[in-house]
Length: 195
Image 1: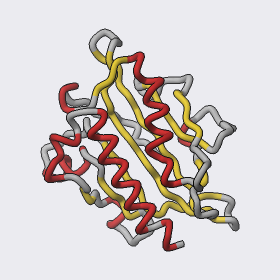
Image 2: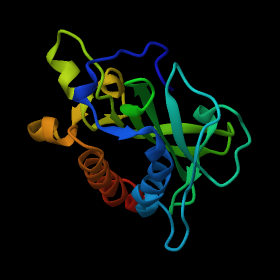
Image 3: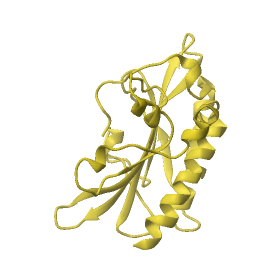
């Protein structure tokens, strides 16, 4: 679930695209998420009709959207009971001619058939615009891991995956996509294959 308050930094600290490139981002995300699916099956992905706190939203789903809220969109992985949720928030700037990445979220969940709900396992988040006067704010800006299925306070901890090269990772759409791609491969190899 997205926090209700979005915090903004200078637009130079986050990957940027032109507004007309958002359609291409859909294809980038489909390719990014491909390792999570069975061979030959792709993830469906759309630009949401409605903005979220002024952001354009690109979100993945199972091929049918039964809800207006992208927070309810999930897609099945190559492991039957494991599902994922992926979305990106892109904030317009420069007179709406460009967009800058505000958030990219991958949530990995396990289907709970008894409660007909999803239980969180792990998450990879990236919040380039998160700022605070703490060392932890730097951990949140690049791709970082959350271990959700653990005792408190572990689910709230941010384990950065690219801290040593954070500035490079956040410098372009290609670099952030590559960093997310390697993070997703880790999830496939270290989480999904163990179920």
